[in-house]
Length: 242
Length: 227
Image 1 (cartoon, chains in turn green, cyan):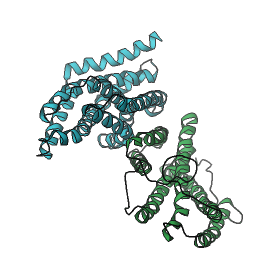
Image 2 (image 1 turned 45 degrees about the vertical axis):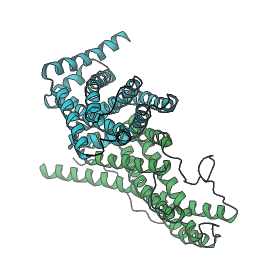
Image 3 (image 1 turned 60 degrees about the horizontal axis):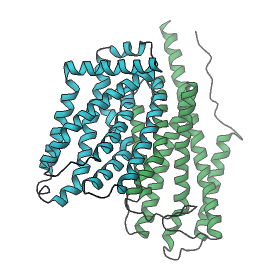
Image 4 (image 1 turned 60 degrees about the vertical axis):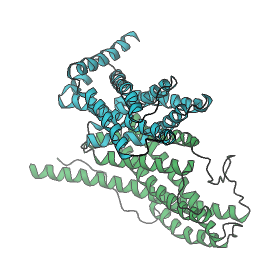
């Protein structure tokens, strides 16, 4: 007997997916214009501009792992497999944005500090965080049963996220870093952002945030489609066996 | 509460008794850490003459030996149960699942601490470096407690996956890095006779880590072992 399967419709017109997609497409050139118009930094001249994408990318990385963590907590409390799709989306996007953050940061560091990489507390934290979440992907790939996969992913996501601040604290025993601090904070090199630079940073936040939102919902939709495909395959196999 | 502790004790004593009869886990861990120590000694020729150079590398290598031999024991603790089919029996026992976790965690902790007690003096002899400092005991105990807590949960997770022996170290080392950083730092400070204030922060940090990662696995163990 064929069971009713929820069918993911392709979005047309003013669907969330399309709105986010076109908003992203329009906001990126605008953000680029703002970045080019912003004034040069006194010391870093042109290279400073990559920072306008570097900071938002890192925030999105953090948000993605937060999505994974929240999905993990929700799965733990409800045992509902739809949270597994949210968890994977957070996990994969987090690694993507971490890579973007590391690459843009390394390019910036090459000009600011004369080296691509140093063992500064923040860089160490990010690199350890990457290793943790990559091992999360390995964990997923080693499990076949979907329910067990979701359960192990959830447990690992909760532990991994709680671990991040601990990693940061443990790196306090590293030599004092020179990573600039933009908002709050009283350590590191302060960076003065003024007037137009703030507006530019805001525009870039919107552009990167829109891309993040679009990718997140696309990944979740893809996850649902994948589930649906599995379900259809199962019903078809069942019908053949009859 | 007394009832709960009795169940924890039952799991713990079962593991210890099984280990006393076979000596599988303990001997493998000890021989492995011994070999690791020798490999370090051979891989760093000439580094072992100058006490100053030894002081720079020995604490880190000591913790590498601890973690590597520890992960070996953690792996066995659940794989043996799984392969003999006794894991199902254990999970069917009329006890809270977290009691099973705590019992397993304590037995793993015991095996690791025993191996560390044996290997540390040998390490000192091979590296010709005094490993004796009474304050090293709390550092090693707290660090190993963190290993056992996270390691037991991850071993339970890894045992039900395809690449179980390979997966545990991958998961375990990445999460354990903060403890390894803090413990290796504290050990370096202690063995080069720096004042105790220098390690207070690290000790505090490892204690906080131990508390958080005792509470989380107790809550999550049910989730990772359910069928």
